[in-house]
Amino acid sequence: MLKDITLGQYYPGDTLVHRLDPRTKLILTLIYIAALFTAIVYAGYALVVLFLAVSILISRIRLRNILSGLKPLIVIVLITGILNLFYTKGEHLLVHFWRISIYWEGVETAVFMALRIMLLIAGTLLLTYTTSPLQLTDGLESLLNPLKKIHVPVHELAMMMSIALRFIPTLIEETDKIMSAQRARGADFETGGLIAKAKAMLPLLIPLFVSAFRRADELATAMESRCYHGGEGRTRMKQLSMALRDWIALAAGVLLLALVILFRRLGI
Amino acid sequence: MTPVLQTVRLTHRYSEGTPFERVALDSVDFSAQRGEFIAVIGHTGSGKSTFIQHLNGLLKPSSGTVLFDGKDIHSSKEFTRQVRFRVGLLFQYPEYQLFEETVYRDIAFGPKNMKLKDDEVDERVREAAGFVGLGEEILEKSPFDLSGGQKRRVAIAGVIAMRPEVLILDEPTAGLDPGGREELMENILRYHDGGKRTVIYITHSMEDAARTAQRIVVFNHGHIAMDGTPGEVFRRGFELIQMGIIVPQITRVMMRLRELGLDVDDGVYSVEQAMAALRETKGGGDHA
Image 1: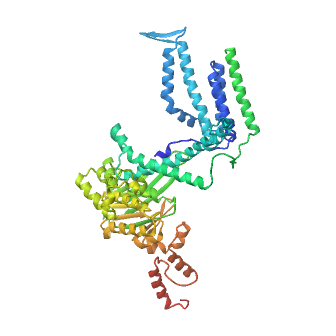
Image 2: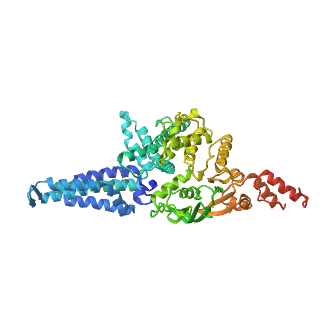
């Protein structure tokens, strides 16, 4: 069933990681990514992995869920790894046959690159697993607020994002329903070649688009009739506020980055 | 006689194997004979919509079987496909499934999928359109230009054009005005054709169910809680109310009279029956 696809993939919980302010988590994720790309040596990587592992442990998100989130990337990780393996030149030759030579440095780079991609995704997965999409957009809006000075429509962008997120489950449900209805009339979405399949999607896509536009129209009317006119002077029901735990978490993040930079300088 | 549709210990779980697992149907045994006219009632989430989607093989049971003419619907892919055409299923708000450029082509979608010859398709489309009262001039229009009620008729014609032996409808009258409701119920009755075809429909309108159906099946928490003639079902009005089902007003009046100590038959569901029941009691009682 389509319903089983996880989108937005938020796993509700009540751990320290869940309770952190979304802004803290966004900034922490950025710091984490910066640290990840600064790390070039073993100690640095170890530190980044440790940071992620501790965060995952606290959040009580099961490792299985993180791994299943990584699954779609297997191909990219493999390709990156293999390319790096063959194209990195170095001093310590390991294997040489025909026109291919593999150096020890190549193995190292390949492993690190693959690791880097996986850590990058795992970190961002943790963010979306522990932060509801609405919190996330609230956090983004608040962080991007300074951009309003240079006329970036921050509120509008955030509103668009929350509406889009809000309608994903609705549209999935709708897709499911239309699909069933057409299958009840003998539509066949599974068999046939690429072109036949694409053609078979029409009875699904057209009603879906029609209904998406209808919903958009209705929502716009509903918002206007409640006097929505953009972000000017709007207050929030849920105010974001930074607590002590947020500052501590941020401090931990800054410490991580500082240590990784230090290790890089020292080259250990 | 082999029932046209039968379920044996039909169980369905949504999102099996995930933390969101939920049992929608729990060991449901049901059978429908050819020619029956059955109303299915139950409050939201009682499993009735899940149930009817099993009857034409759209959903696969988690356990248990669904039989059409005594044969397992999922015995082969080919048979499942055949059953889809022989058991027509009309969803709630079916007007949202229309997609073709013209009404004609939309109605023809089902028959074309049946791989019928062009002239046969043409005959069926015109017949189905006429059946639901759509004029020739509408056939070449875009379905998106029609009114809500007309769109619904097009959707119904799209199912009827497959000439299913069993017609299943999920709240066909929802969102229609009283006139449209009346017409639609008449169409469905006419399709039933005095018992030549089988009709099963979900409804929230107890008045509709009481008036048209020969048999009412009540769903509650994924089980069949009651199954019988309207009289039998409405006699248990108190239980129905506990299941969150609104019984016909006249039945409530009779229930209240009974509570007040008047010995009347409370299995009635029409004003005429109520009058007859009251007359009967009048002889003995001095309240009336």
